[in-house]
Amino acid sequence: MASSFVIACVGKPSAGKSSFLNAVTDASAKVGNFPFTTIEPNEGIAYYPVACPCAKMGVSARCKPRHGRCNGGRRFVPVRLLDVAGLVPGASEGKGLGNQFLDDLRHADVLIHVVDASGTTDASGRETRGYDPVDDIQWLRQEVEAWIWGNLDRKWAGVVRRHVAVKAAPVETLHAQLAGYGTPREVVQRALDRLPRELVSEFSRWESGVELRQFVGAFLDERFPTIVALNKIDMADSDKNISAIMKRYKGSGLVDGVRVDNIVLTSALGECFLRKMQKQEFIHYETGSDDFSTDAPDLKPLDEKAGRRLETIRDLVLFRYGSTGVQEAIVRAVDALGYIPVFPVKSLSTFGAPQQDAAFRDCVLVRPGTTVREFARKLHSQVLDRGYAGAETIGGIQLGESDVIVPGKNNVIKYTVSE
Image (cartoon, rainbow, N blue to C red):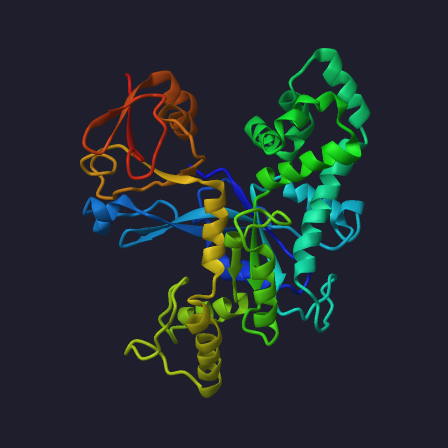
């Protein structure tokens, strides 16, 4: 059963988006190691690490995920990653691949914006010096806001007239207009909750250029949470630019749709090279680690050029920042949505199917607030829904249909189906 959300990776040309995608996706996943029915050409598979209950239950040796992998209680769950092309200034007006870019965003739940922290590429991706990366962060927000506001603005007068005529609630009227962006009703409600209550009460008097624009800003904060991956952190001017960006976005609030704790420092090319050396058996390295090893007896000897490059990555990236940051970007993206891991099992004694040695075969990431019965429908649709006879978790604790699934409390679930 696939986790039904999408991380969209965006970035101007030459910001390092292709390198970032290569660094976080698993090329081998394209030959079947994923729980999704189809993978489009612009999709990839990344992995989100979670704590697997196999370690706590003492069955790590038998933990054999159907998809992804588990290393001693650290589970790597597949997630969809969408490569969104066409990000250039003026995308909302159709420039570049603007229409395709914005249409692809409809499918995304969260964005990772890859930004060239070195300032060596301009807004169109051409080589330059001294470009301010803050401009990239700002105009992504401006383009998406202009796209949504423009679509609403063209028909706003008619929307308001209908709203008054049918005496609808603001959330219903706005949801009807925004459903095409893949927007659940609760997202629209949360966006309205960000506005002053008196402003919402005057909804029928909203002007397109004032109150509607204010709402669109709040809507973007809810609909498209954004992780900024400041890339190329090992280049000359990156330190200066990183300090300026962190200063601009410090504090607990949102600025340009970005929180300071959703800014991640990355070296995508560094990660790609480390993974290549690991695959070719020159080093031992695990994504997310703060170092690698070269002296194990099972490793091949390094030539001088590769050794120098590895030492540069170690000094300028791993020792300075603690990792290449690419996995942390995926973690922040999933965490921004609040998704939680759930482990459905057929036995609470073996944590697998009867007569099978494998344990904890499946892990599904679900929205916060998902109930036991809702997860049953997600798992087995009509079969389990019609024959639902109960659910329990570790320790034989019975679960109510309306119980909300909570990590570490009841996210290992066995369902019972009536004959």
